[in-house]
Amino acid sequence: MNTVTVYTTGPGCQRCKLTKDILTRRGVAFVEVDIREQPTAREYVVDELGYTEAPVVVVDEHDHWSGFRPDHIDRIARS
Image (cartoon, rainbow, N blue to C red; front, side, top):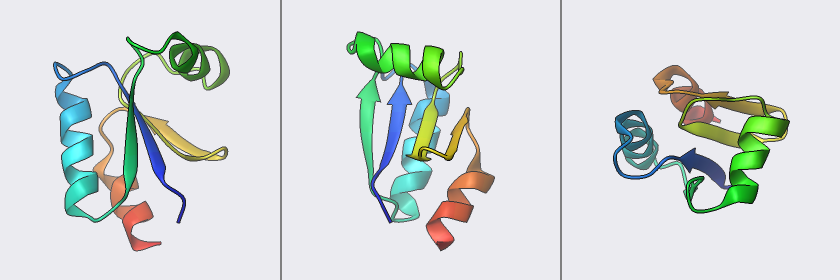
């Protein structure tokens, strides 16, 4: 499995924290990108993917979602 990317809005985002915690507990490797600090990442999330809330989790170009979604995390952890 490729490394998952989690686009966050920093440590104050509780849904981001929950998402990262569950990914870690399920053994899913991920890289965190804070979109407040990386304008190009924010443009990608908003303009290309069309999301307006964090976190945004990108597994690959066809598999991504926004928000706290333990069901999706379980799905990718099983694959």
